[in-house]
Length: 124
Image (tube, rainbow, N blue to C red; front, top):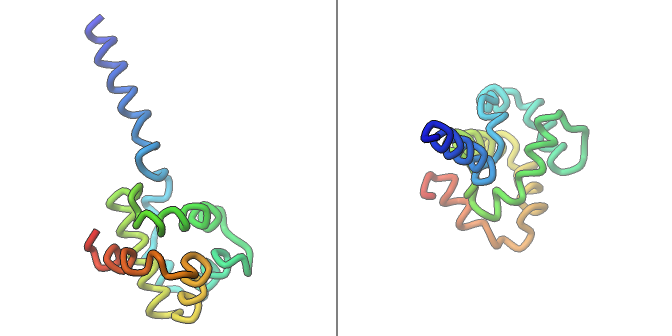
């Protein structure tokens, strides 16, 4: 009986994790490769802006972006935080115009700018 209770507690804990964080399915996504390929990064940006087709990953990321921005990635795992920082810095450095469009789309009033900048700088 004790074994069953321990098993049930472990199972409950494992099932609770996804509700607290985003799906770890893309935790091994190669963000560095993405930002090193300006054409690919631009395609992802166009996907996020509804100006072009999306890859399956792009579609999933696009669904998460608004909430992650508004909550400064509160449901992100440490790995996901690292990935997001890498991609955003890539947009800011290599495609600043596209980054400006994304900011206008997701935060038109600038409500989240300060908290998101702190997040990007690792002050979360």
